Image 1 (cartoon, rainbow, N blue to C red):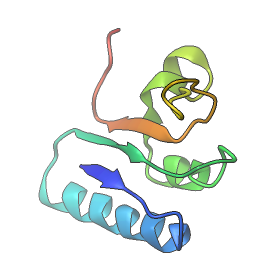
Image 2: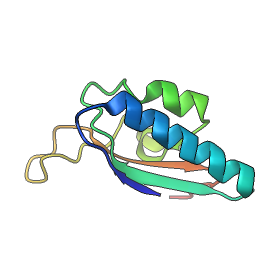
Image 3: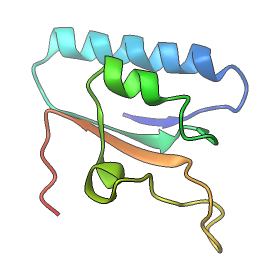
Image 4: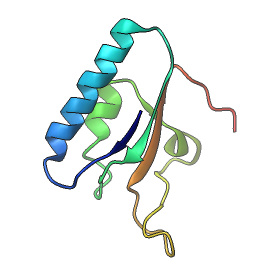
Length: 91
């Protein structure tokens, strides 16, 4: 799944993502990769969904912090994320 969230109504969009993940898990017992721009400027608004849905953020899992990816010429903001579930990242 790849998502491009709108800055407006993030909570509604996060809830929608949560529902999609739950539906996916009911249908299939497969791994899941979710990537996109989560507009999580404060690095905390998506945290409750990470825990509730048992998602692992790939970069944070390896380095202890979210990847800085925006703006591309001087990456200082952590907006883009890659989450996994039922996968193991080796490197």
